[in-house]
Structures are given as C-alpha cells and as structure tokens.
Length: 152
Image 1 (cartoon, rainbow, N blue to C red):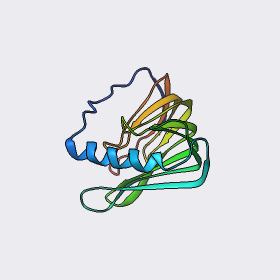
Image 2 (image 1 turned 30 degrees about the vertical axis):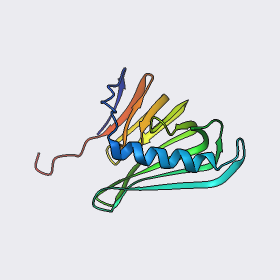
Image 3 (image 1 turned 180 degrees about the vertical axis):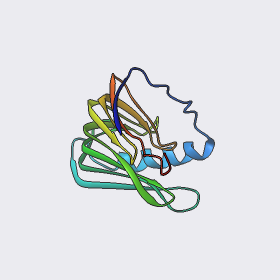
C-alpha cells in the first residue's frame, strides 16, 4: 500500500566538527585552492567510506566548478547512499553548492530522495557530508511503501 503524505518542516541535527574533521577540511581547502576559479571539471566523483572501510556514500556530478576559496557549484548532483556497503538509495538535484568549510552541500533546486521504502520530493536541501544527514527545506511530498504483513 502506498500513501501520499505532505510533511512540512524538517529537523536538522547538530553539526559540530571534531579536530580530525578540521584537519581533513584544511587539507580539502588546500587541495581546492589548486583548482582554478570557474574551470569546469567534468564527471566528478567523490566516494566516502565508513569506519568499517565500506562505502557509505558516493557524490557524483556531471560538472563541478570552484566559485570561491571554499565553494564549488555542482551540476546534476547525485549522492548514492550505501548501508552496510550496499547501495540503499540516492539524492538527486540539478544544482548544489559544496561548502568545504562547513562540510555541506546546499541547494535551492528541486530535490528527490529515494530509498527502498520512501520517495521524498521538495525544493531546497542541506546535506552534511560527514554525518550523511539531510533535510529538505520546503514542503515535502513523500510516497511511503508499506509492506503487507505475511499473516494477516
């Protein structure tokens, strides 16, 4: 059975960084500074791994361009999500900004989040890279798949 729900508002968790994250961010900022401003890099892919060394997410984009010291624009963004090393969903939007200093992807465009049990759509989002937490920033429409019980 599929139900259509309209949910307004999303709670964001705390996004405080630890010292290890700061060191990693500093390295990323140094690397980003080597990319010339407004030069397009095509077929961008940034895999992420958990402590167990299994994939946790892969960020892909058709094109990425540096627009400041710590920000990039990503076109045709797709974040592939993994659970226990197995693909478990994705987040898709036409355009987003990657802010290295805050470890965030932020977009104002249409967003679609798909998992095996839920498909959510809205406009505008925030995705924290390290924690893999996301929020849609507008009214959200969700389709939820409920499994039928085996023994009614």
